[in-house]
Length: 238
Figure 1 (cartoon, rainbow, N blue to C red):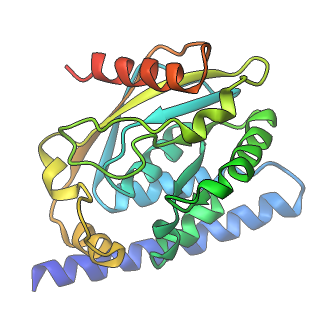
Figure 2 (figure 1 turned 180 degrees about the vertical axis):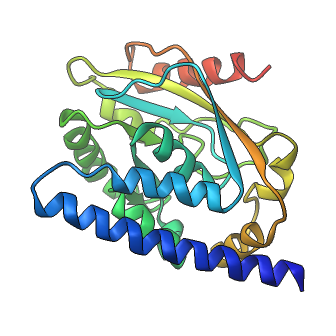
């Protein structure tokens, strides 16, 4: 009973935040100003589901490709709130009610896993976004993990920095949910909606630590970039 009540309260809070965010976003767009509200709204959603962000290190603000480990759809809320980044995410997330729409609001690029023929087009879209100066985040594990094991990095989409656009750097991010990791990690074949509801029913708050490692110039090709980013995430895990 308490879990369902908590679910109802959080959904109500999400709807209120959504209405306020849409109104403010529309007002900014009406006057031709860059809108900060998608980023702020996603950060607010993170707080509604119980996350309290702890930022370690200094995130770059532009001309950056973030590479992060991946635990849950909550990752997108937290990284967006901290950096204003756009994302590359698996297409399954686009079909999760509300979450998929929120991600589109923040210019998420959804990719089909295993769609080798579409990689070139996806890379072209990524290069366009980065060339405009906006931060972009990729989860190079290609799927969500258990929060303990850092999976191998897939280098396919890192063709966006091979060769790198002028002035662009790569900054690795380590995402850690601490004691709440096993409750929140999206592992296996759990449907997206079921996972979202499970998170919304979860009691209490949790600390989500985002550690921004030192950025580096992407050199040596996409496999070298993947290896360097993975090594830097492992180095800050301890």
